[in-house]
Length: 150
Image (tube, rainbow, N blue to C red; front, side):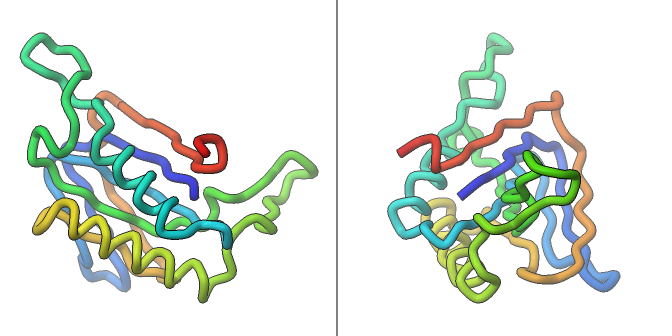
């Protein structure tokens, strides 16, 4: 699993002209899946994302997590994060999970996030053409690749 985590003041996902999810202060996560991802990967990544100390404390140090600030989480499926451009100039997605597998993992990922942060989770729509709007705060952006963590 790969995730691009962005600290935001606001985030919104629009599908077919309609807002399907929006948040205030929190994190927008663009996430992609491989066929090797399982419940252990989901738990690891969500614990890491929710626990990342990327918000300022009273001393303006990045020392506070999403959970600490009662922030919101917008989860956006984005298979292109698994794109590999080491050869040529066109992305290869051979490491990405097939769409049906990725959809099932995405659903489990969102459900587990909702269990961890009840009432503060929204998500994009899998396989939809989404327009994602954010006001990045900082900017603060973190990349996490579970393949490099286990």
